[in-house]
Length: 519
Image (cartoon, rainbow, N blue to C red; front, side, top):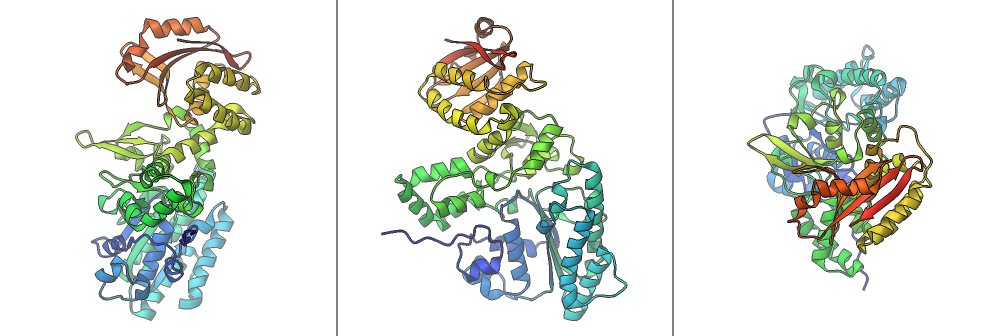
């Protein structure tokens, strides 16, 4: 008998629709109660795209609108006793992406006009800030209740121009003007909530609104967006069982694969494991594993910023940093780390309380492979499609323990790539190898320290650890001599795997591998 297909809210961010149409809802209403009954009535939450920020904002909208029936059967029903209805001004700024100055002003005009048709407008109110202030005061006067202001994806108009200093300044000033009444209207406001991907400095965006509490790294809100391991195992147990039956594997094996592909996010420390909700729901809906979150939006601005800060692919992953280095305003950043973290491409993996230093790394397989596939065209020119096919065969070669066949395949493929400028240095070929080998889903690292030097590259499969020394326009004998002279394998003697030495020389004239030696 075919399993009944659950309704998954993929692309649905409206709380009322999810509840009324019986879509799956992971109960986050305890967090909503906690937020709305805390000491602070101005809050900001940063989370990556498609992590549930809009649904959370919509849930707040329904709560403050007094829609008690939508919360039946949820934790909120037991917590809330009063169910007061407040006037709510809800602005979704995701509709203002890819805009210039005039388009942004038009977008704000439409959003304000929508509420002005209900609460009225004073003819003297012309600028966005004047109109927003007028709306708040009239809503308060007409209802006798303080006003709730919800601003979802406040930074959407700014993300695409983050690397353009002039345009960023123009759009930022418009948004700063729009948000400026929020502090002046404090006597009329019950609650203000803003979401976004990036953290812009309060000075540049919120002007004098310095009373916003950033809860993005607060432990009580660690799992406010996304789906935790516990939530998945309890509220989605049937979904896991159906996926296991479809794939003809056991329950535990499916959980391991879900964790490998979509888990691994932590937005503070300590924190429960958080799964990417968009990918998880899509995997259950399709009943297969795929790259859902990463392929749902081309990170063009990310790739531009990686280029701007001269970040090599191998530098994206594991690193140690203070919170001030990644939970920081992105428009003043001097390194790529804040953008990588706030966009969800790296996440917190550990924390040293004594040193107050966090360990950051790529969260999971989906993100790691997605990043490398995005970076691959930079190293293989227009041959990305052929490269992905080559990588599949390369993976089989290495799984079979045939590094000689793998290098032969790489030599043939790389010789088909047109020569590019500024590539005649060893590091270019090292990063090219790093990107390609990362796509195999094996552990790969570069510049690995040993007692006597640094290994150019280490590749670890389930059965073998490869120590690789790379040279440019020299010879493989010289590379092998360096491995032996500095006794690189000694560093990995306790890894539990046989260590294979691989010496590779690249030929810059042919733009491919010249010769290699495996021992």
